[in-house]
Amino acid sequence: MGTSPEITMILFVAVGCFMAYPEAVTAKHTGITRHYTFNIKPKNIIRLCHTKSIVTVNGKFPGPRVIIREGDRLLVKVVNHVPNNISIHWHGVRQLRSGWADGPSYITQCPIQIGHSYVYNFTVTGQRGTLFWHAHISWLRATVYGPLIILPRRNESYPFVKPYKEVPILFGEWFNADPEAVINQSLQTGGGPNVSDAYTFNGLPGPLYNCSAKDTYKLKVKPGKTYLLRLINAALNDELFFSIADHSLTVVEADAVYVKPFETNVLMITPGQTTNVLLRAKSTAPNVTFLMLARPYATGMGTFDNTTVAGILEYETPYSSLKNRPLLKPGLPAINATNFVANFTSKFRSLATAKFPANVPQKVDKKFFFTVGLGTKPCPKNQTCQGPTNTPKFAASMNNISFALPRTALLQSHFFSQYSKAVYTTDFPAFPLIPFNYTGTPPNNTLVNNGTKLVVIPFNTSVEVVLQDTSILGAESHPLHLHGYNFYVVGQGFGNFDPENDPPNFNLVDPVERNTIGVPSGGWVAIRFQADNPGVWLMHCHFDVHQSWGLGMAWVVLDGELPNQKLPPPPSDLPKC
Image (cartoon, rainbow, N blue to C red; front, side, top):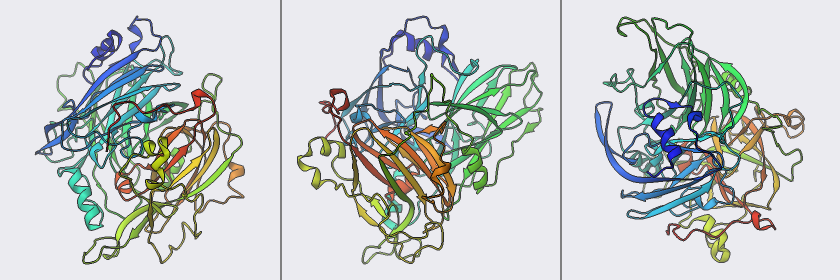
């Protein structure tokens, strides 16, 4: 991995559990180019007394930290040494006029094939905080993921107390089986996939799992110090509650956007979301060991990994032995604590200051209403399927359209428009074609339509989207992620969205700005964004099983009139299909 001397210094102090606050580095910062190399290669890993070969970046699990500053340019050469096709998504990066580097396979690029490479080339503009990178093809992100840490510009401070140290904590899921085999079997049979065998903190399952006591994540703290925990949910299919025994956390950032600080004992974080929290260590070291726990928040009818991952928070003390210390365990909400989740989500607010404004669109040019949920598709003839009633297959859709991945990348097709009509159509419905009682008694017909349908919007259109959960196969929370943009969460509620009575209650002053939001189970959420970034941008559920079943769509944002409002041509090394 090639780095500048400044980043080398930061990485040097980042060895081990902590990333030291980088103010001590004296090199003048004006926005520079950072170089990384990602070698995609297999590595034998032992977890839960089970040895298997997994796909990794540079042999690391989780993958290496990428550390940059706001305003830096990032060049990451990805070299594929495994039989799987691969692509890397820089989750939450705005990718302003750099859509070719966004990474979702068959959306902005064809995947990188074995023996080939691709350089992701983009500049991080107007963003600082915690994001992450992950594979964006099939279920490879089960093991191919890592933190993307964007430090403030040189000589700029955080809008909160300077932390003593910074600690990335990635929540993941571990499968004893090959995740690719798991989803392939599910798609073939039409049934739900086998669930994971464990959750992990930074790749470690912890003492509550079989033969995993030695694979326990430990967070060591000094009394009286403040730590910035960079929390990332990289799990495939599960929203998670997180708590540390007898410690409160102050939320200061979400999805790389500062928020009005608030305290909580329990966090809920969906796949695709990042949350920065301040942990203040107790002033004197107690003779106690504190457990950190994470377990799922689940509301759907399907099976899920109903286990708990544990880590240990321990104080650096003169006490001789940890074994004699009492072990404190935090309380967590019930698995289906939807009211807790709604209350927690509503606490997030933008700073809305002169330096960090909330530029929420006050007027809306185009309104959309998308239903989100599960459905079915027919079982092929002469095949027995294992879907919800044994005859059809599970499917997922938005506005009853199950998204079909094309065989050619959509962005390429759009840019060289001569053959785009053979790859996709532009008739994705702005509203459900057949309205029904979305959260009430489900309709008898649960079949979805399939297609690669997109929405085309002019440059700089202000957009409002209401995302409505459906109860067709059971109400369920769905974490929706929008590529290429942040959006403002202006409203949310339970039941069916009321277009007359709900909008007057929208928050247009300090709504939270995110890239991933949970559509409430049995409810709706309203988002707004300004379409100021030309390209083709995927919007999808960040449960990989739902994405595999087709829960997604894509926006085509046209070029503007000015040169800096147009998408540049693709790079010469763009992978071919």
